[in-house]
Length: 303
Image (cartoon, rainbow, N blue to C red; front, top):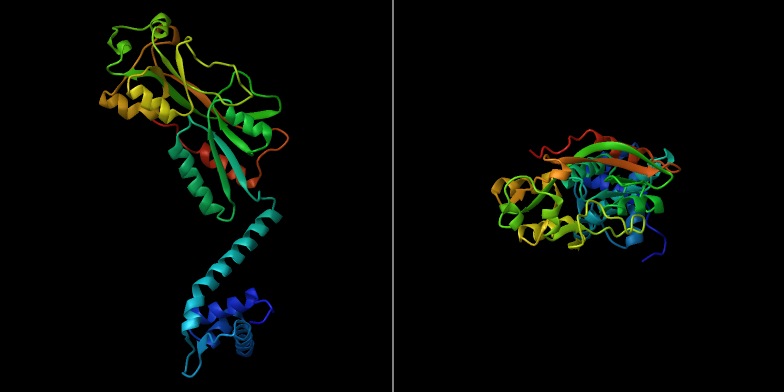
């Protein structure tokens, strides 16, 4: 086989003939003389050392070798189109890639719907998603690992971080229906809570290491993610605070019970989820587009 490279133009001509069914149709589609189309295909066949079309009839017919190469030619052509589209976006200031971090409290269906819309709007931009807890989202933003984050509130955000409210997320204190706390009538006190194991999320970021959020006492289990916390709650190993949208079905089915705590107020409470980014490096057009999609979403109806 010749060392002379096959060109993208030759593949485009090959596909145009396949799709239009004739050399003349390909010439019209590509706005070229039919002789130029014939020359391009002859060169492609010479380079591949294969006959791609049987030209003995009125119309060219793919040979067995031609059939075998059509899908690969389409794949290469698609990659070239993707490369050109991505280069055009970058010339317009669009980010070559988008990385974001989302707090575990934020509803994943909202995130996934927004990312599906992003994929349709910016199909050539790869997305890198991180789902983290507590201070880990802000840590990734500070480090520059992600362009922006969807963060739960912190006692204090790092200097140089800008934030914009996105939506409130309701939290509720719960335990299993068979747990001793569920058997107590009336509102609970912190003394009641401290007598039982609390299930809390582990903050794995250096940014907020050593800070405890809503931890009632020393008897607690530290868990890395909300599914693990929910499994422990359902198994009756303790009590804890959960996003209401994650436990609504379990509350409705009676598997979990909402606990009213006098010191925390008798109703579920909300935390404000915010979009955060470095002030020195705000999101580009693609990031802003995704943030706008997230802003148009409604907070989950947990009641």
